[in-house]
Image 1 (cartoon, rainbow, N blue to C red):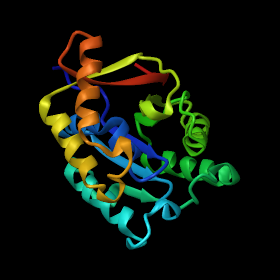
Image 2 (cartoon, rainbow, N blue to C red):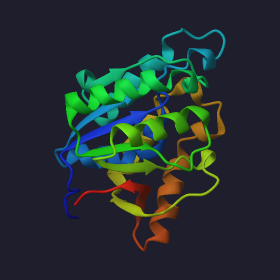
Image 3 (cartoon, rainbow, N blue to C red):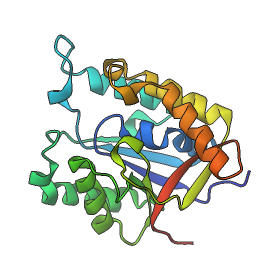
Image 4 (tube, rainbow, N blue to C red):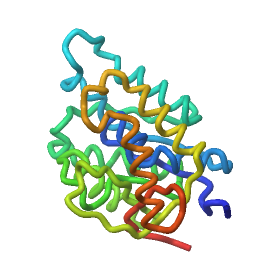
Length: 212
């Protein structure tokens, strides 16, 4: 396979687990190919932690998942906006992204798609378009949040990429009660996206803006 032509990548994750769910295989491929990968997490979802579990469990699980995908701990930017209330903090979130753009200057940004119906994801997507409108910007797929999706960019993956994605998803033990927390879903999804594109395994993205 040819190398993905991006060397400095910023991942925008509304909540702690979104980037692993949406593009974990692509993250693994990018890092294996030598890309410098940064992530920005905008909420640790304290309100959504099951009763009886530690308040920092999702942050700890995020670090475990990042280690699986080889995202360096110092490359993780942490914010803590209240879940389902991002719309109240749009300007603050935009300013956070503008600072990230200046500090990192990424040549690829991965964000939730414009079709994502979750209220927090919608804010991250729209503010990312404002902040990174002069960067290559791709929207990742979260099927349970997408009523439709534009299958415009296909990233070919290998077994090792999906295995790492599944391993990273399994780090979120506190979320296994959710239907989409089932790690086998992501292997099956990669197979389906591969079949649609006459390859073995893939993740797909919406092209919001692209520079060649």
